Structure formats: C-alpha cells, structure tokens
Length: 197
Image 1 (cartoon, rainbow, N blue to C red):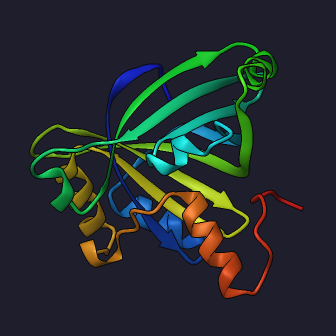
Image 2: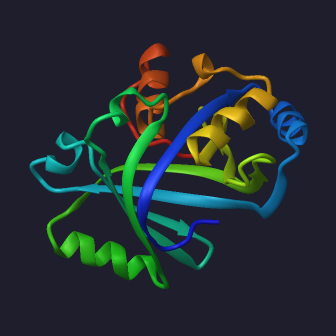
Image 3: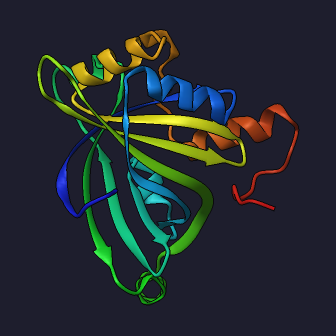
C-alpha cells in the first residue's frame, strides 16, 4: 500500500503472461500478500504548455475506493543514477480524503487531465534474507497486460528478480503511459486513455 512522504523511488517492471504465472513467480520468493486486489483509477495532469511532461515529471491523482493519493515525480540527476538499470525518480506523495475536490483544485489552477489509466493492483512484500531490505511488489492487471512492479533497494530488486527467474535484460523501466502508447502503435490504434471496457 502506498504511503505519504517523499523520497527516492527505485523500481522496475516485469511483464508476465498470465495471473497464474505471476502467482507462481511470487511464490518462488516467497512474497507475502499485504493488500488485497483493488481497482485504481489514475489521472495524469499537466500545465497547458506541457512543461511537466517536457521535464519528464508527473503529477498524478490516484483514486482507490473512497480515497486517493496525489503523487509528484521528477527525474533524478547526478553521477551514477544514469547507469542504474531501473527507473529512478524523486517522489512526493500524500493521501487525499476527497479525490474529487483535489481534481477540482487542479483544474481551477489551470491544469488539465492529459491521460487516464486504470488497473487492478495487489501489494506483496519480500525481505532480502541477507540485507534485510524490504521490497514492495505490486501485481498490476491492466488492459494491456499483467506486470509485476518491484520497488525498493536496487540489490533487493535484483535478488528478487533472479529468484523469480528473470535477469536485468527483462527489466522494463518505462512508465505505464509509455508502454500503452507503444501497445497502441503496434496495433495501429489511435492514441487514447488506458481504461477497461
């Protein structure tokens, strides 16, 4: 489950062919289910000139149940981070009790919703047996496929991926919007939101 605060987000995604495969790989760790499957509806906002996207930043409002989460992500610059085989972002987020009011605030400030995506997400946890580093693993069911997202210490990410049968060559560091746009282009479909029928 997401919590509020700020810090550094280090994550990779791994594509899986089916839910049974995802559960088999999680059992290989073994990972512990911490939060049951929930539906998430996500809105991405930007300024009229697109400056957030141009700066590779993200402002997201996520709605889960009756509540939500506002998240801002920006790229991390500095020696070493450009060579890490993972998606690394500075992240600030906070829970919101009334997502509709937050959406209204964004719109009144002149922001526009530029993209919407939906998914079903379950949260798992795994602790590296040697370092004790905790890893948050999300099982994401999306209109374009199923992904495991590993977030936490990079060494724990690498160790967990190996235990589940993957190598760094399998890592996906793109965000879901980029993956969706590539999925649409491959099928000759128009650009749009990623929502369930």
